[in-house]
Amino acid sequence: MKATAENKWLVIVNPNAGRRKGEKDWNQIAKLLEDEGFDFEHVMTCERFHAIEIAKEAIERGYKQIIVVGGDGTLNEVVNGIFQQKKYITTDIAIGMITVGTGNDWGRMYQVPFDYDKAVKTICKGRKVIQDAGKVNYHIDGKEESRYFANMAGMGYDALVAQKTNAMKEKGRGGPMAYFYNLLTGLYQYKSTYLEIEVDGECVFENDIFSMSLGICKYNGGGMMQLPHAVPDDGIFDITVVEKISKFRVLRNIKNLYDGSFEHLKEVKMFRGKSVNIVSRPKNSIFLETDGESLGHSPLRFSIVPKSICLIAGKKYFREK
Image (cartoon, rainbow, N blue to C red; front, top):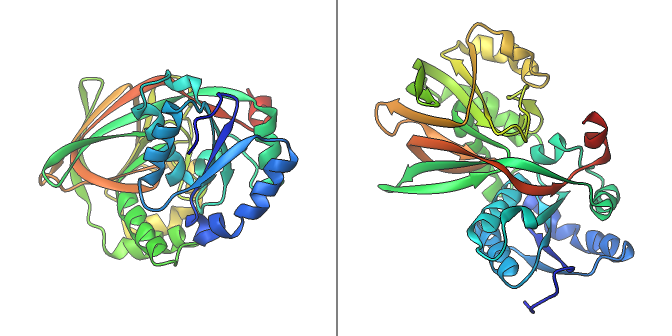
């Protein structure tokens, strides 16, 4: 990759996103970018976490404008690359999104069009907003690791569904229905886990949980509104905990996840805060995913990074504001 001026764009393409739509549709997307006059270079990711290194290296070479051609997982990696680089403050780096993944929940939050031509035009207009980021410290292979995220973290049943969906993607069997399929089949594998949850230094929950979501934006799982009241730039995590619940009630209320009305169930508890600590019983028994990417296990420590990600949003998002 050549050293470039700060006004050039780097396009990071995940060829495997959306059942290899990233690869299949790249020439079409590149032509649209060229037609709109973008001065860009592109790099294809080769493996998981590769986009972290690509973004970090590119920014240290001078890039300040990045387009992600992929899904929420690719975006997550680029965000982590932005936080790892040392050349600029994180909000100096602008992120545009052309969604080719299967979930695309971050783009849904900001009304980023799914149509490639409209997505390119959205980036061209450059309506920038600043949102918060989350940081989580988790454990894997006996070590503590950390990860930033732009959308949502899931634990318990949510993490199991993400793990099963990611395994399908690796075998080329992803797609829009993969998450929903695993949402149903995972019911017969998952067992409730006892959690102790501390928010801003106060213990707010001690009980068995079915699932837990924590984050910045509203959607995950391909349009499920698991954090219906989330505001992405208020400097506070929204938290949804679903206590132990019967399989029948889960199946009966799946549709309510898509409009947020599930919050009225008696098993649902909601909290807000800037820092969250989670311990599971038995130890290490709750697993974690962030922005759809499976990571490690408890104990977990979450902290908010206020107004630290610069992104390009769609027109409808601005009308709402």
